[in-house]
Length: 301
Image (cartoon, rainbow, N blue to C red; front, side, top):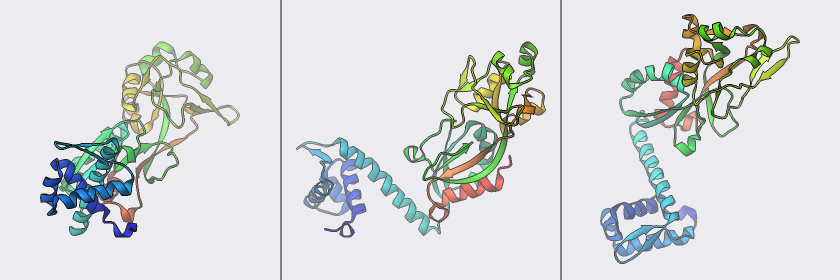
């Protein structure tokens, strides 16, 4: 039997009903089939896949390890099919659960304030928002959109640029009063340089040297932070120096709570703020396309 002759979504639906309803007879009633037909369908499915999906006994059914994996993926695929049909029937109006993963600083300062208006505009969308500076795998986490700050790894993901931000080394006036203002990058060996506990594509702090070249200083200090907002709080508390996005520190610099350090040596590098997602625009779910368009329309860095 060719792949074209197999109703794979129909097989998945019957298999899922067997598991969720707890038996062949219950699944047969729900699918308007005979128990014998359901049993034969599951047997054909196992034969085609080359693995046993269900261990059968006279009293119960139990998923095998392979069956548990197949069940999880089947539920996801059937849910996606239902979503696609509902969106098509509704003229692809935005609806359904939107899973968004965002950098903590961007999420708190720019994204969270926009969420109420977005959900008011699209009342049939529900949001699942996770804020973390750890780079997650969108496919593994089943996220629709992620906001990334900085260079992007090579991947199958598509990026939509939301803006750029300068980066600067900053410290609190209290810290500088106790330890002095560094005059050159070489002076940083005498200072507490705070770093991050997660892997970054660019680990060191770049500075221009007297010849116009770039030197890189590795941050060495007595504390690490898991995200930019925690790092900002440590710097504001006077613990040390940190290299942070001006997007994140702009208000504190303007209010005098932070002071830029070594600006004559700042190479002027910037970080892109990007929304990344899977798939091209023409094949995006309406909820994802609407969210991306909304970010481009409203985010002002």
